Image 1 (cartoon, helix red, strand yellow):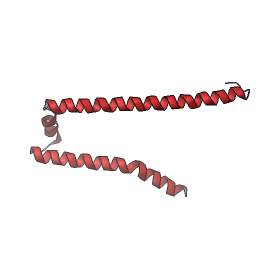
Image 2 (spheres, rainbow, N blue to C red):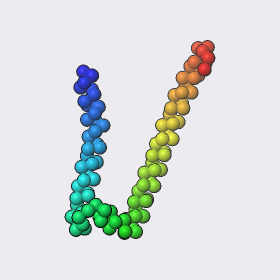
Image 3 (cartoon, rainbow, N blue to C red):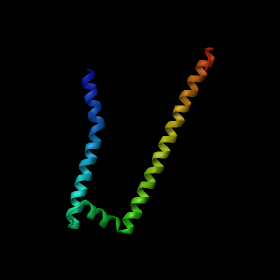
Image 4 (cartoon, rainbow, N blue to C red):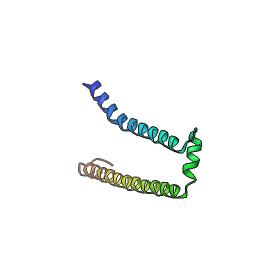
Length: 97
């Protein structure tokens, strides 16, 4: 039973990353084909030379950073509440914090 759960956990964690890598590979091959370039460095330079794409990339990364920060703040507040409750329970029982 434990092996089955471990395999299911691994699939659940690895499958999204594998799908992301496959999508990135497809995007890379499509971009290289459309731009008629041979190396990824040439594709990257052509992609980043477009100011609109660079601005859009910065905007997307900025939004992702803000979303990550908000999620981390919510998780930290949740952990603080749980620890506060645990500390309050210990104080009520007469234990030392």
